[in-house]
Length: 150
Image (tube, rainbow, N blue to C red; front, side, top):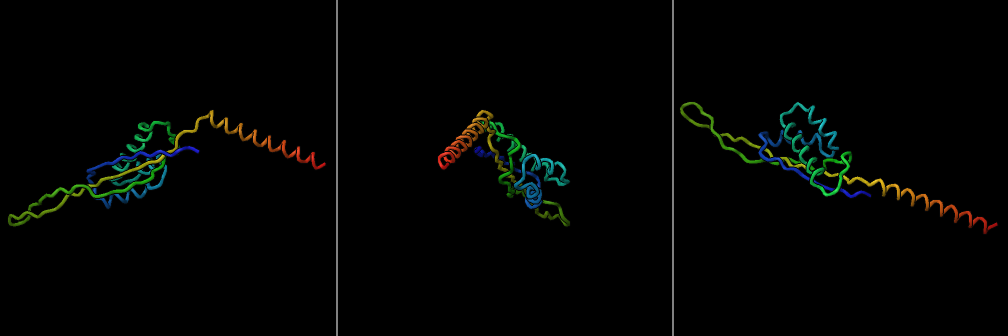
């Protein structure tokens, strides 16, 4: 059986509220990366672009940084979550010379993808040969047992 490999990406300082970004992230949670890319490209929310960038970055990290070759069809989003980032304190002018404070809240996006390594064709062919030999030997054993019974 093929071994599973993991890679992650962490996007920081996204100029969108964590609650709004989390809604977009929940659309692609536990999906294949190819499906997630299509969904995010067609999502009309501003945070979709940032989530798409994080997903593609994690996918590239898995394909390029792992020591073995990964099958691109098996790559899924293992974990994705959004946390609040830094808050910038700003002020807006108000009447009578006052300044009213407000905060610009940013988001951090964490994406972890998992993929299985490609199975080498030579090993797959060997496994088939071994299976055929096992079945052939069990068939010959059955016929020997039947002959002894007669």
